[in-house]
Image 1 (tube, one colour):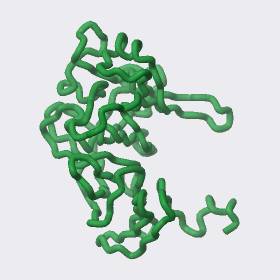
Image 2 (spheres, one colour; image 1 turned 45 degrees about the vertical axis):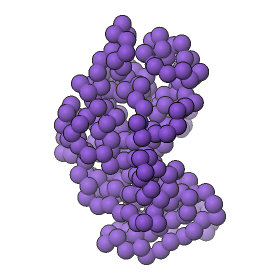
Image 3 (cartoon, one colour; image 1 turned 60 degrees about the vertical axis):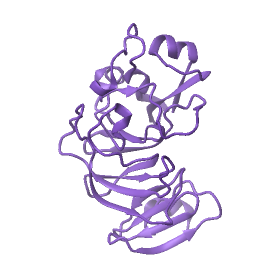
Image 4 (spheres, helix red, strand yellow; image 1 turned 90 degrees about the horizontal axis):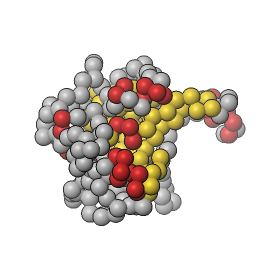
Length: 273
């Protein structure tokens, strides 16, 4: 969810440098569906850094603190001047149950943040809630090592029966007019270092001259081993591991994201298909 703060509070308490009326940063909440009780939460506000005002508690340099979020980061490739307060624009989360980690796709930073869920809410507001890892755009934390691969991204999810994550990198920045789907391998141990190549290993990827949607979209591994890709401004693609396109579906306009289900999946029983 968004957690908004008035401009004066964002400037006075956190060293925000711009002039939007209300500043919306990202927040995660975990809800018990039986009681609607919020049982855990994490706020990006408590994990920011800025180098404009040394009197603020979050003063520092992002290059020396890759575990933090540069509150005043603006992608040099972005043409729009105003964010209307939406400074991060997260658009997808995934939960790694095995490692108790949360992955958050953050569009305007062109990267994925990895957050430790094995904390209390109180701990998550302190250093234990700092980013465990990040990947996709080293420039978001002034890291000159590693190669940028995301130019906007949408959706992040775990690849079944693997230690991998899948991300749809939209393109749409810096003249990049082709989308890429990445399957990336998590490291054995997350260790986020300054001035080090922290990018994940690419184990599979797919792109095509006709695959491009600068907004929404996503990709999921299917039970047959193929990958279902949503190209938001077109529809869907099904692609094999050998990168052969075996099925395409042209939607009727705008398609947010498509999810694959087997016909015998119990989740479909309610639809009586």
